[in-house]
Length: 424
Image (cartoon, rainbow, N blue to C red; front, side, top):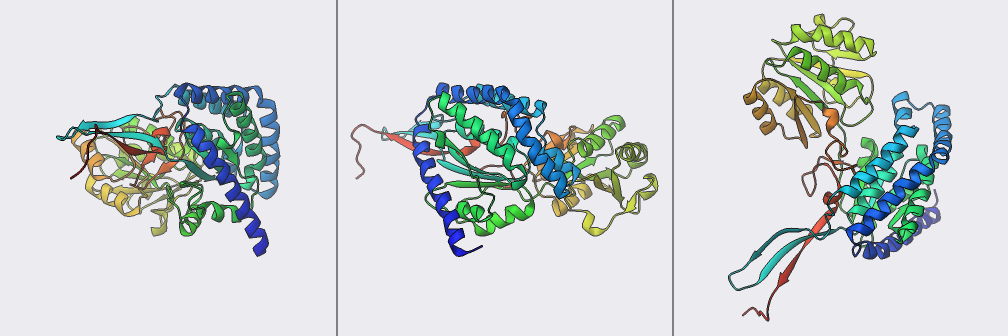
């Protein structure tokens, strides 16, 4: 790529960001009813344009097949009617939520009579970079609208036709609600120079959120001169405690792996207390064999897992995003927590137990964005948390953590009310 070409991409991103800042000023003043109208108009438009969306998505699927994309990634790329319906429903659920903008987080009076109010306000312009999943286009647009932020979206080249179609439909919904069409913009070039241009747009873009593989996220973090919210990977664990109900343990251990194998909240490592292992591992192994899941296990339990391979050190702490799982026996809950601390990614980890003290210990000591008790890691999702959708999942601790909804795309300002007060 020539320097001139890089500069032209940077100029494009900067022009888009300037338009976004204008739109952001309008969005910050809109009532909740106006934003909800836009969300419902977009949902209506998505459903009315299903044949168009499916046709454009098929172009991406055909190209993915030609490029030899892995089956789990093709599944993420697909946009069938039920996924389009889910996109529309997600937008309607966002519309039903309380408007976070303008909420008073706290308020108090000082001894001198000053009134101090801490109010939630939009960030301004948010950039989202994502791969494979075209439904993110609608989810991100919806959450940004609800939180009063303009957004610039940059999807992966493998979903370009799908994303362009969804973005065009979003603009139709914005127009129907009399909102600046620059409130939601899609970067139409797949040139990687756009990623760097977005990540370095100081003064124009307030926050960037990369969603995708670890390579993409690290590239954004290394280039960025603006704030980044991210998670590098989802190395999620399920720990089956010695007191776990065997039927529940088997159900959760299997489901957390096979129900969405290419997603970041998928179980990648199963930890089993040594006392429970003989009761559950043969059943879990049978279910995994049926689903064609490759098992990589430690020497102590490999005999309980027919056809399992011996695990290597690098199998622990690895995000497979495939029908592969690491399995390890542990002597205690302390050993399980130590393993998660060493190999986990602070995304989502679960315990299956009937011991309340064990559950409390696990939720207190496991330092992850989501900690589950007696349920699958696959519930770590904005929609499942009642957020309607999610802008992403953060394993950071500032300023948001876990699945991020509209309120997480807000900051706050102090409003101070006086009556002629001066400081002497």
